[in-house]
Length: 446
Image (spheres, rainbow, N blue to C red):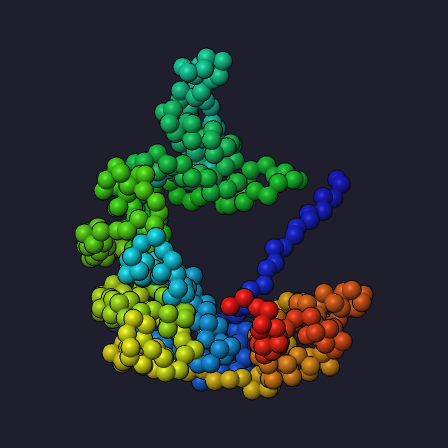
């Protein structure tokens, strides 16, 4: 038989922190020199490791974290690493403080909704289902009352089999239509919810006929009986539950935008419902992490609102990031560290980051080049390290991609020092841009 060669194209897009996989700590919470895509900042990474452990043990309620340090010292990278360490089950929401002012709602409402998005509820629900491999499927077709030239299923008979038994069922038109729309055929393994009639296709049975072309998901034939009680687990956020209840509350909500504000009565009802589920053993609360960058952009009203919200029993872990020193609290004339009110600062565990050493800068550039799949000459790496130390790390990393394109123009397989020099001439850093503005200040619009 002729061999079919599968051609796949991997989607690759590199962001500033796409290479980060964790904090890079050992079993004693000691930071490795290079780990999880992070370099240096050992003290901050070890502090973040303790935060991760406290979150997992549920000992961070009512507290927050502030990551403070100069620009370009890895504050956001550490927050992303915390989310990677916590895993996919823990909700992680990342926003900039400016987003609270660009929403089509009150700033406090925008903050509240964002906080609710960072709190998950793991719901366990036991349903009576029919599960098995489709052995036979026959439709009883009748003319469509709205279009007699077409036929639709009036009913259907289906035979489901497991490794232990085989049973035959008759279903009405609604479920039969689901069979047709989802493309259910012989050999598929399906689940039918007896209460709601919802049909879910799990994949193609491992015992069914295989084809040379096609990317079907192969699953094992279920064990046990066809009809059984099955537990389903799914995770939603408190904001999802808020919106679902809000849509049910009034017919006019069908025509409202997604940015609609939610009444406190709805949130209170959702909280009570979640508490009932938890007491009945049907659900589990998963306090997630809300990371707010550029914290100094928040004003005194948002800070006061956050201070109160952190006292709630259903509050996420809040991580703030600031690169400001002593700054005026927005909305007041008071100056405070990081532009954050002192009463809120007292409630925060503060993690500080420090400027990278020259060796750290070199390792970061080397790690970033490897992540992007770039080959770089030793002299070019040394030149970029020099640029990172004298200008900024971000500027040095930004030059990697242009330098790589320039190396391709030369038909070279690796970035060399002349490519870095050429990229540096073409793209200005902050200091060059400032000098340019001073030189042409009279011709610039002010």
